[in-house]
Image (spheres, rainbow, N blue to C red):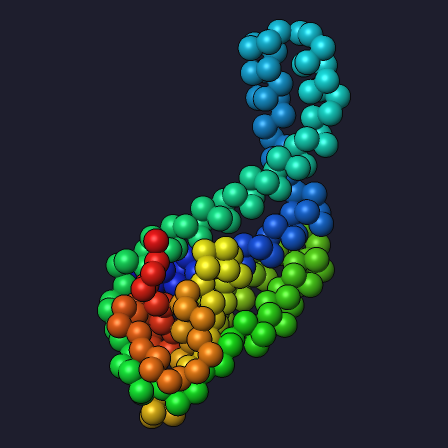
Length: 202
């Protein structure tokens, strides 16, 4: 199950890059135009409304397509959060951490780099090849599972170092500022170096 969750994390982490690419290249759901027009004609007939829709279909299609893509990204993130429940349990005992540092700032520069790559890709085929290769690298990396969509669900990303001097990535809803009395009894293991805290998860 951890592999499935990692797959969804990777898809989610790269999905915003597809949204940027789609907006830049105007990749829309254009194939639905004849179906949509037929449905409108059947339901309301030929009148001012259908004429207005026909004249403004493409501008509405662009906005609707991008909203649809973003909705799919949110839904994928919700599925990922659901899969958390099936991961193996773990914990971090009190007074075993020696350092806590925010990981958001460390990830953002490299994550924004994905956006620049998406803007430079010429077509959809090359996009999937390039980001497919990136996805493979992420899958086999130790801790690169940064997903900004998780901010919407209240999760934050931290690097924590234990008494054995091992640094791991911790995804949690807690606001961590000090190692004093820090403990996590409801962790789920994504990899040996990446954990997600389910305490307080709705």
